[in-house]
Image (cartoon, rainbow, N blue to C red):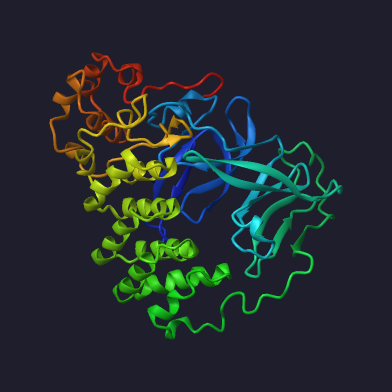
Length: 447
């Protein structure tokens, strides 16, 4: 049991069910499904997102993010470093259900990394074209599949290995809670529909069954890191990770390629390295922080944060304060925390933004706005939050912003004391005085 709260949460765990952690949470009644972009950033569908107005939507789930809800007791369960996080895509009241990110090129290159979402009430599958918007995303919606059958209720959509889409239709049996399903119709069975592009060619060996991956050398496997078949690509990433230290040299060579054509290979190499639990894999991941592609830098930041690599902190601070990409700055901010010493590494760092972004909690930016939902979460002994005298620092009007950011971690565990908080009120910085690190400046109509 890691939570007794009443608010919904997004959890993560290992494949064996261990290491359960809270990713984020707040104002959603029914978070339905999540999927990941190639960079490791998470997007999910929500049925009943309790902002103002209430909406069904897609959400960019930010590590440590707090999301709005009418019930303030739910929101109070989460540390807040500023405004509550908004939805990414608003569908209205449509009973959003399952979703998936499209990985193949079989529908055409313009479809790759699109998100497909099933809309139960309106009998549709929506296609969302995802583009970066600062440190988050925006989407443009298109109707992909529409039915005029009132008993057609799409509830999930999956990408098969050959690039076709499988749409799951529940049929007419469900009748609880949805205005278009007031009468049960168990005689109307559901179905599974396969959608292919007209004129699509047959994909040869879509799952790579004839690829004898267990017998291939790391160098031979690495040639498939950008395989056009997504399932094969994932198998190769896993197989190189299983090869362990024997694959590190090959993966380091892939990361050294740096050409635009090798982008997918380099991102895939980062994920293989992130799963090799050996110190020797950390050096290539640190080198990836200097990759010319923002996608690689975001993936490497996430990997190093998950691995808790304290030696990467100087490079991550450089990204946090100087990278041109808001997404990379956010990724660097969320990488701080697995090691208690990391907060000490932030000493003296000032965020480039004009509203005290880092002082408010080690944040990047959503567009031109700080990502205050991204917090520095310190794991470990609350008595080792950073290597400096935290109480002395916050007493000073110009106190170390890293120490103020460090106060967020203890708050997660209930260790933030009155003695640490009260001196924050005696400052010219409106952020801490407004409500702790960053304040709780919820915008009108939210929360």
